[in-house]
Image (cartoon, rainbow, N blue to C red; front, side, top):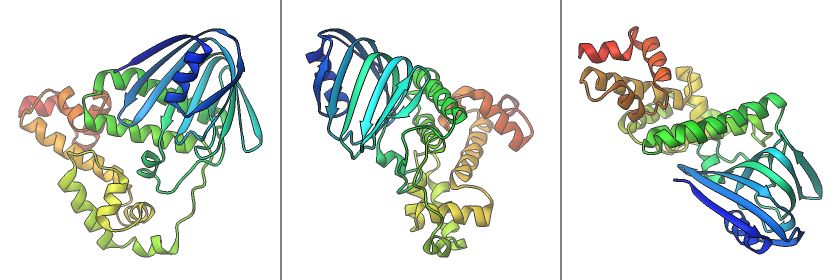
Length: 301
């Protein structure tokens, strides 16, 4: 569901921005302002869009979350840890480290924002945080933006009621963000290498096969196997030559195959039930695994 707020003065803008991000203090700006903010939720990820004719300067308490953005017009200046960062039209950015006070100034922005919590990040890469506020390259920035737009405008409106699709979309967004920005990711530890043994894989496989219909994460799989996320990833690479999430996708594809053979819904409905937002992607994966199209299996069921 989309929420829309429009305000026409700095005091109201102060209230809206403080409620959405963190408590801020307006240090200056244009009295006659117009700001429009829309927000959508995709699972535990929030997509915001801010636009209007507004100029202000502010200082704020730590955001508590990672707030990423893509600026379509106007400019935004962020400051934290003694560093000033000016973003102009076309720039992708991380607003500020989530545990640091920050300063910001905006002038007639049209900006799309994505809000991620550390908890959501930890489900993909335990203990990883971002080490910089600029993307690694223009290509990485473009990939991040296109992923955000696709999920916000195409996946969310259609599949908000499909838990596995939303979960997969969330993980895609997090993985793309981790690939686009510098992080503090560490190399495998001695303990992780020690824990990456066949028993770890057997525990994880049993958990995945018992819970494939649920929204489970790499963190859930690691917890069930009694090891760290890095250890479970290393174990699957070492013994199965795939990631835990790739194995989960394979199990879900097998479940979708069973649904098709039982004629348990349309191809589109079965695809969404097992985490595929795009029937075309589901069809390609299914044909690669089974040698026929999903519709052929459904008709022969």
